[in-house]
Length: 445
Picture 1 (cartoon, rainbow, N blue to C red):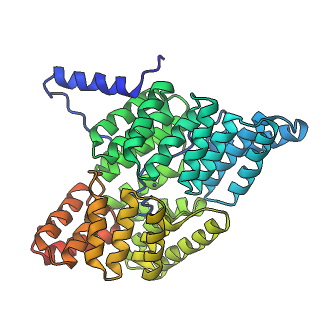
Picture 2: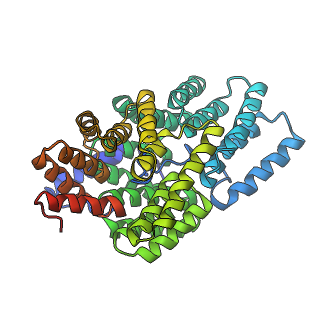
Picture 3: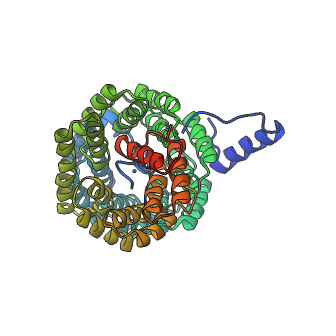
């Protein structure tokens, strides 16, 4: 199948829309970080690891280790092993593996200085540790060696997005699309559009990417991105359809299992959602699914089990810090809602100083609010919603802050908007949004 760039695919769809005078309705369809509310992007590996995806990953790592015992100067295998460790760390939720990735990538670069695949691997490790300035630096170094490096092109987009440099991220996505159109670039291209509120374009790009995906890992990855986008827009039936497609391609793909559980919870399927999230956190105890599971228990009236999940977020954060990962954004919202409010504000402020994104603005605004600093909080809440990104949790936070400062009309508007967009965005948050809206005389039905 011939490869077609994202911009070409979007242009074709736009032309079809124009020729049919809008009769063609693009419906259905909808990925990190606001973990626990909604992951901003279905960010996976920057490029497929040949033979090292899904259930083959562990076997592939062992095969690489065996080869390197026999051929210790194989710089290519060292770079592949380092990148595979990053993927293992992500799928297992085990940041200790980043140290192993460092060693493998360092060895590759000792054997072949300037090797672009190893530099791209370093960029992936830095991004995984939330060192996005370092990720950008390593990605640029890799691209200086090989301007067509797909992993480096993709990680450069990720880093720019996570640094809040959205204009530069858009230009980087255009450049990557021209050089290496494919699934890793398509999904990032779509997310850059979604951040600007253009969910229709994001959906079309992801659908085009799914049409071109053949490997089971790529199908699962893109279908999950579509499911996450649908969930964020309150399109739960579509989210379940896409997650089902992802799981048919890879029944063990955890992001799809998590997305499916969230959609089930939003539709009232609490028992199935609990079972699904328990399965996810049993294999990958990350803050997002842990908070989601805790809030389901809390909404169900089981505070003891809810507290267990929230405590595990602290355990994960300690492990992450011990292995060089910055967990502040992951934990700020969890602490604000379910833990130490002072710690939430410390973490959110620290993250804001490192990177100024819509997600860090939202986290800082909410942390200031729960600490009673609402006038200051409102400035950040407004910044979080300024790009047009359609995220119900942001609108809920802004509405609660507007209510606290006494702007009831604005609060009604923000809370109504949150619940119309995604009425099941959070078992606890959605309930509190409805209660607040009723207190303001709004329609919380």
